[in-house]
Length: 309
Image 1 (cartoon, rainbow, N blue to C red):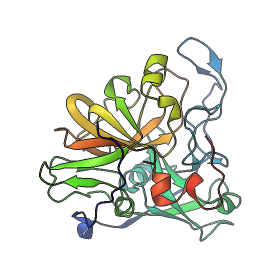
Image 2 (image 1 turned 90 degrees about the horizontal axis):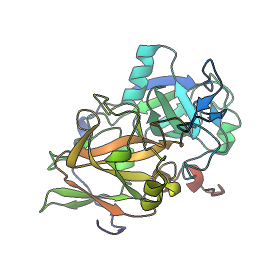
Image 3 (image 1 turned 90 degrees about the vertical axis):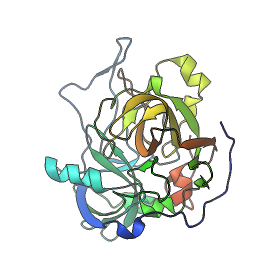
């Protein structure tokens, strides 16, 4: 495992000029609740907690993702379509770092940044500044300029990209090693595939996420998982996401923390995939500042925002 670095690669060659930029749209979703308000923990305790959807005024990229009295809570604003097919396209074509613009309501004209995708519910998560949150309402329409699907790295055929926009890639401090044909990626945590849960078995990683289970306290302490933040870039070892999420010795996948910890079995902080290499051509490098909020200047890293967690 390499230690932290601050070098930003210059002019990394990609196929950006060939990518399609396309509009997708959803609306600020209502918080979700099933027929019962209870979530049951693995040790049989019932919990009633806030969770998926809505506008979360005090939960942002950069905050601790584990400490909340919540279950699957999504930072800032959750966006969704009621039509299943339209929502599939919204989740597929939105990429982390895409620009989102409010087109209806009191916050019309305000812009934000896509920060993740939540599987199952298929929400797209968007960060807005506080003055926009105060004007937003459930049902307001959000237009996203979707670009990033199909992005690839010239010269690195064994590394696959997904859910990552060219806008984010320009500020993501990846370092190339052309001699060894590997990319060095800054991450806050290195996570064993053995503790990954909900989302396993999916045949694709272009939508949604999968969860880091935090039910084994020894593993939490060993890998410092109690310090996970929304927006943290993490490495999942022995995990291949090329055509779905599978265990594969030597493979490395990189993702971003998109939703909070959960109390139900098999669940935990969610990870949306950014990069994967079945051949292990990704070298994770520990760096406590590896967070999309820092790179994109959003969430708790916006000017004038108080840091929490």
